[in-house]
Length: 253
Image 1 (cartoon, helix red, strand yellow):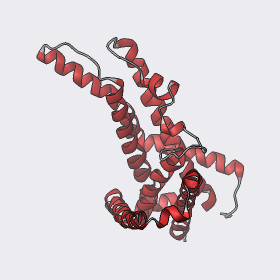
Image 2 (cartoon, helix red, strand yellow):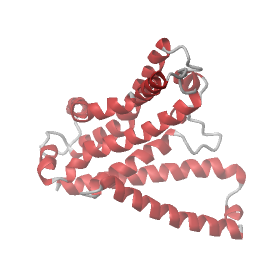
Image 3 (cartoon, one colour):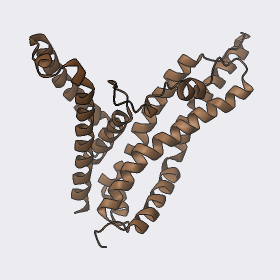
């Protein structure tokens, strides 16, 4: 197999990778996407059993549940889909697929940070909208609250204001667990979380030290914070992509 990028072959491989995602992880992904509806049904059943008056959860509560399910879906599904690469038996099948390293790398990134989050959001918010047609106790649909009122961090691309929940942050959040899934053979998510926790503690201590002596404000002005934040996000994202690339390259060899 030539290790050169072929756009036609890549297109076919990407489609195959997406099909594999829904064959292997479709039930999990759909399950997370329908968790909001399931929660409403459980509330309805409890109210019927207790003889209480039923009322759907308000949009704020349903939004919190949406982001919780989104976090679980975007962490668990990519790690389980691509974490098998480190398995000697299951990983061999992946390594023998007729595609170059670059094609496999791009497909992994696209499926992890685009296909899975987009499918989840569309399915979850769409299911919420359909349920609202049956449930007249809804105060507001997630579509109206998140999309029309622009309260969804996934679609905020504001480079003029400081934003800690832009899409690059979401992508980095997903890829850090994908990278952990490629490095660790067992307890992939747990070990990745512990490594992140250690990094956060070290960075937190360093940040407190800089804030205490005021050196941070001597280097960076308030007007420069948005630019620094965007550069920081870009560097983290590039480091994660580089880590995934070299890890996949090592596995390939």
